[in-house]
Length: 107
Image 1: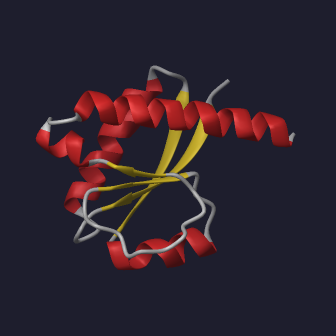
Image 2: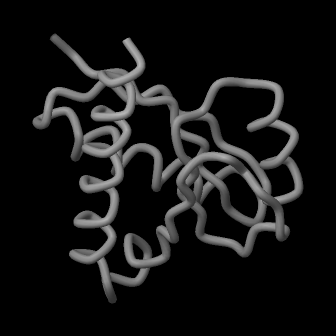
């Protein structure tokens, strides 16, 4: 059974980098049984999107406005630079494991 993740991928323009990051995350997580539904956005759109839609987490490469997003927020810059990329994947996978545990406990 596939685990579904609703990802908000955020970069400065809301297009190129966020699409690249979303694609890399989607491809990487397939082998772990995840189906990623990604939405790309600019930082200024993030809060409104999170408030209006159902997202499980945000991965960003451009600074986000200070706000309580109510979901995990992970810095994805390591995917661009390669510096800290392993730490990014570790944080993402531990966050996903916690989200799965939280979903199971709510059922």
